[in-house]
Length: 585
Ligand SMILES: *[C@@H]1O[C@H](CO)[C@@H](O)[C@H](O)[C@H]1NC(C)=O
Ligand SMILES: *[C@@H]1O[C@H](CO)[C@@H](O)[C@H](O)[C@H]1NC(C)=O
Ligand SMILES: *[C@@H]1O[C@H](CO)[C@@H](O)[C@H](O)[C@H]1NC(C)=O
Ligand SMILES: [Zn+2]
Image (cartoon, rainbow, N blue to C red):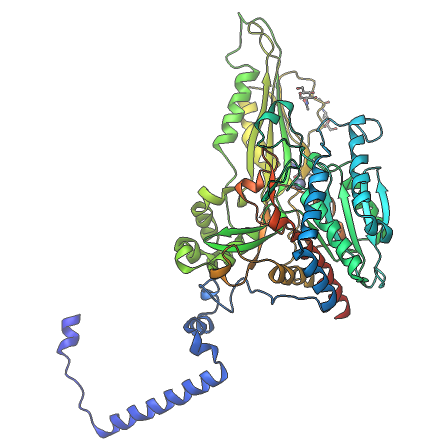
């Protein structure tokens, strides 16, 4: 082909062609100037043109200013006096020393919650929570003079700072924290660098159980109220603090009744915004700092499988007894894990979009970037492909997880076991549901029961079979994946603007502003009881969580003091900005 073209003779340059050429140049220059005059962006950013021309294809281009993950401007409170009062306070050494002491002190109260706790009022182990209440009352007298305190099931504490505008016109802002901590077992105490309940401050870190999860958060939000009250600020929008007593054991004693009380007061959608602890703070991903706000939680399920049969003497055994059949079921489950798929419903997908746009081009893998547009358009093949690419690093953000945690069977080596049982913990992907998980397991397990000539009792079975040879599956504590909180809501913009105003990226000199991104929580918080109160539920901890979440739930939990002392500035600014949004209506 090349040769052929090369042999073509050039057309003669006659006058009309030259005239045509100049005409084209003039038209081109005129059009370009008009374009640049109207859209000056095009001059500065070549990608602007490709974005306009190709639409979606560049939504995930590096530094795309019109694509995914648009950032709101920094939001600063209108009331400058109050803002300055709080900023100055937070910078002052006396304040910093005081709040560190307050956190150390509350860590010294070992308010552990245990899975086998009986009802409040009956089980004496709850009484430690009286001490927590006394402690916060003693250290925040100003707050308690200004709020209405409700005791919910004795140890749930609800503090309401009434705004001047009725809740029907300005929905309240709700901040959650929990008073309880994960227990430290006596045999593990020696593994701690500093004893878990000393609240030791070494000049840099505050150590102890609850430092991060969640007493640092609790102290920060009540401190923010204290600062606001002392500044003279009077809210238009009601502010509510809710301190649960049982987040670590699933919230039925405190979080549930608190949510019910709030619902009876404010009704469906009666709350403006809920903020609660998150599993991410300011974190570096793809070499860029992000404030990662969890806008959804995966679902939860515990599945049990009972295999029962007639027993007998081990000298005359069947080929497969209950233990063998259960093993076959477990192996089949593990060999058929839930498949991954990335969809645009998943907030982790939005995070990838944010990273594609805001991380440096060389730090974000091309093989992820080049699939994002297709995934957003619902291309099933691209959704599966992307899940494969992400499988090694982010696998459980995009699929349902299963983990066999307990297996039991048999009591004597020379007796045929009558019962074998296994329990499986399942965390349900946001795209899935309890019903889909049940179907998946029934499809796998039913044929195994049939093969061995056993009755199969599914999840919805009436369980009235009298046949002793059966495989039963059932579930407990089912929780659907949470609704995904909107990122285009005014409440999210207020939160987002507050984050951008008060928090800084990890590499302050090289990164510019912090980028706020939606994210997914793979664990559950107390917010699981609060879905009816608002769509705007955001789980966010305004610090950097290092070394596996500051060692929350394990040995040597800590919090970095310089970050902790600034948390109240974030929460107070959130209250002020949410209050300004009332006036803006
Ligand atoms: C399963 O087995 C356990 C004993 O391990 C028993 O308590 C439970 O009632 C059984 N459930 C069903 C549905 O068979
Ligand atoms: C069990 O019943 C629920 C509620 O009716 C339903 O959503 C679910 O799909 C059923 N599960 C199975 C495996 O049939
Ligand atoms: C179990 O209950 C179901 C529904 O009530 C019924 O259809 C079935 O015949 C019962 N089976 C036995 C063995 O009683
Ligand atoms: Zn927690």
